[in-house]
Each structure stands twice: as C-alpha cells, then as structure tokens.
Image 1 (cartoon, rainbow, N blue to C red):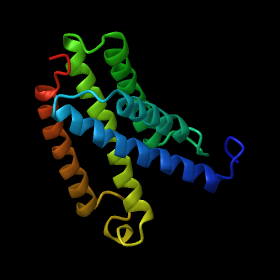
Image 2 (cartoon, rainbow, N blue to C red; image 1 turned 180 degrees about the horizontal axis):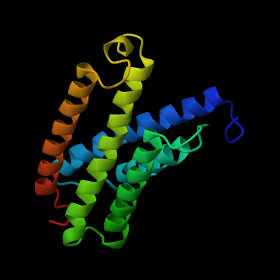
Image 3 (tube, rainbow, N blue to C red; image 1 turned 180 degrees about the vertical axis):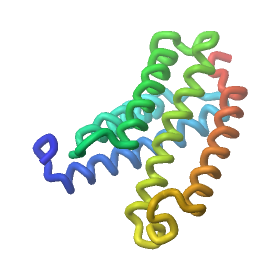
Length: 162
C-alpha cells in the first residue's frame, strides 16, 4: 500500500501523471517554439511533472536507485523553472533559464518513459534486457539529440513578452 492505494493502483496513478506530464510538456514546448506562453498548460506540465517525481520516491525500494537520481535532478530543474516563471516573470535571463530547465524536465520524463518501455513492454524487453544494448542506447541518443535541437530552437523562439 502506498498512500492508501494498492501498489498496482498507485502505479497506475503514477503512469497517468507521467502521460499527462509528457503530453502537456509537448504542448508547452510546441508553444515555446512559436514564441507563446500557455499559462494553464504550463502550470499543468509543471505540476504533473513535480508530482511524477514526488510519487516516484514513494515506490518501495531497498536503496537509492537511478530513477530516484533522475527524480532529484528533475526536481532541481523544476524548481529553477518555477522561479524563472513565477518569480523572475521570464524577464531577462529568466526567459532562457525557464526554457532550458522546462525542456530538461520534459526530457527526463521522456527518458524515463523510454526506459520503462524497454523494461515493461514485451516486444521491447528482448531488444535491451539490461538497458545497455544498442537499441536502447540508440533510442535514448536520438531522443537526446531531438531535445537538444528543440531546446536550442525554443531558447531562440520563446519571447512571449514581445
């Protein structure tokens, strides 16, 4: 039991939060690429991504895991994104700090989704049973390159005050 839910129900809630975080994050990133700030979508992305990380720490574990490391890093970048957006109001350097940290947080969501896919989906699991095989590494590298390219373009394009 986690927070009064069975482990399977808690996992389902965590997965739904993850899907909401990824979907809303993609919407926010696409808006950034058009120079727009979508207030409600942005709040949904940030809140769901924070909840993804927080709920990730509640799963039973016998020690520190790589997933917990990603969760800690994600929360650090999300804190910076929140400060840039709600304290710095995207003024000056806060604009690019927000874009970079939000894109990194979305990347972490997708990184973990790919990792979980290779661990849990029957058709992917044999391709990379230890997540050190070429198909897994190639998938993660392609996604990383895409996020670097989109993040770079978002920094250039995102000027919502203009």
